[in-house]
Image (cartoon, rainbow, N blue to C red; front, side):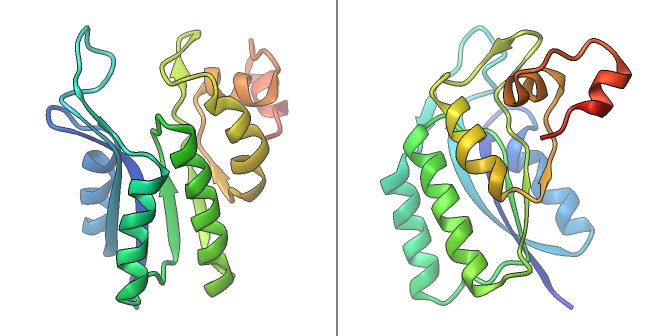
Amino acid sequence: MECRVLSVQSHVVRGYVGNKSASFPLQVLGFEVDSINSVQFSNHTGYEHWRGQVLNADELQSLYEGLQLNQLTHYDYILTGYCRDESFLQRVVDIIQELRNNNPNLVYVCDPVMGDHGSMYVPEVLLPVYREKVLPIADILTPNQFEAELLTGKKITSEEEALEVSI
């Protein structure tokens, strides 16, 4: 049975993050993966310099409409990762809700890529969107410690505290 994944994440020319690191392993496991690149950067933003494009909601909508016009929007899983534009992230939420209307069994896996080691590397305006709109619809979340602290407002300093954090 074919399982389809819509993966909405970053793309980098150099390196392996986002769609570049998620698509191949999923395909090896037998998933059909459709990728929408939230950004296209020269390299990940941990480098001193990076250049590229950030998609906004209108550009995402154009891609989604193309899929809709060809009746290519049946997915079993949605996977989201790095996003840099607030309007884009809000439109992703809308799309997930639309896709769930067509497939109530759709599983949404969210990696809320926002930062690490005590600092955010996306605009802070994304945090309330994640808290208020993304978390309520996600089936599976995979935050790192820093992201879990941002999302819950709780400091995690021990394994016990990590287990107690409820997102």
